[in-house]
Image (tube, rainbow over the protein chains, first blue to last red):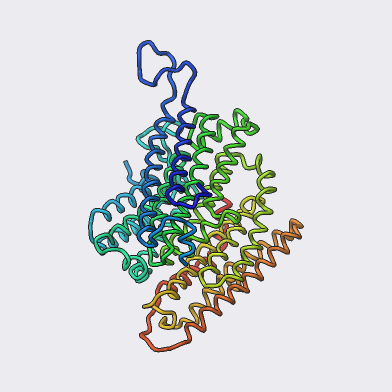
Length: 92
Length: 467
């Protein structure tokens, strides 16, 4: 993400980074021998549903970041005709 | 039910609704009117609330379970200040907004600028009022996402590149904060700030590696957001290219909110005494290096804007030094506040400098106005900054911190030199060609009035922290 010259790759790297945090949170919610957190007769122990709910918000945030990033890249492409960092820096 | 009981939520909801109305009104003038009304209502509401602490639970779910908003002595001044700042931007800086931003947006989309501005304001107010860590993260993201968009506006060809850099670094910072929140959640099972501190204290978890790890992640994320010295590159690039009128708002509020996030975390989530040693040992030397280097870079910088951006960097280093050092909050609060006013006035001058229509030479009495602003910002005698500088040096002497004392004096001398340089850039430029219609610049007068008010009530501002 930081070393790539191509802006699209940078934004993809950022996306992967954010998705890894989603998995980290969902892993936190797992309770050993816990069932899916839906109210059932036979289940005594449930996994924690809270991290999943939090991650719904984080997914939306990640999606918004991705969209803003891609919109910025679009404008860059309109303005400079390229999406490579080194070429844009050469421009000026 | 009294409407005032809902105030902590209303601070955030009013600008959010305002943003919504701005977005659907399809008319720039109407949008500006709505935004001004919203900011005024919010300012009146925030000034009107007299009680010092107020807690609000969403949907009646009490604190550890539900989301809690809390207004206390620390965040109330910040809320009032940020409301006043956005009102100032909407009322006084409209000519620059028009010239630097709205001119470059298609007419049918101009109203969306106000929607985004208010949305950004929602984010900042939310950060200030929430007492829930995950909610804090969401508001950090809301404010940053809108800040990226605001930064990318304007006619500088590279403003988009600056905004993209800001997006990458800002998202990394926010993600680190999110990891920290996850780690804290994993060990305490709670997201409420007060509740986490309670659990950490009662179960004596401060020694735990997870808490250590979480604090490291959070502090690095927050420092990245503040743009503290080694991680300041995004700020240089973004601020060098964004429209200066946007920076009047973003630079003015950004550092205050960044420091607030940091302060709220180390003092309200963690027990500061436990991590004080490690933190100050680590961050103080970096802050000192930051003071020296950014002052040096400010002296060497080529144009007006770079000088101002680097001077902002050095003032952040002063703030961090006092933030991590010892418990001298009296200096910290006044420094943050007056530094924020200085930044606003310097970026206003930049707006005049870069403007084609409202040139500095056309301002009525520009010599006096700009001289006063530069004197205030440089911290010459008779200004608030001067008192702060004297207090800082006095504090360092009392604690026998001689190397720090020398570095601070060097930093102050450098600040005089680069303010002289700013004057050197501004005055010859303004002298050429005296023709043109004279205008009265209410914005500069308002900023100077604010400086005077800050000077008169200096003791009261400093006392805010002690309560």
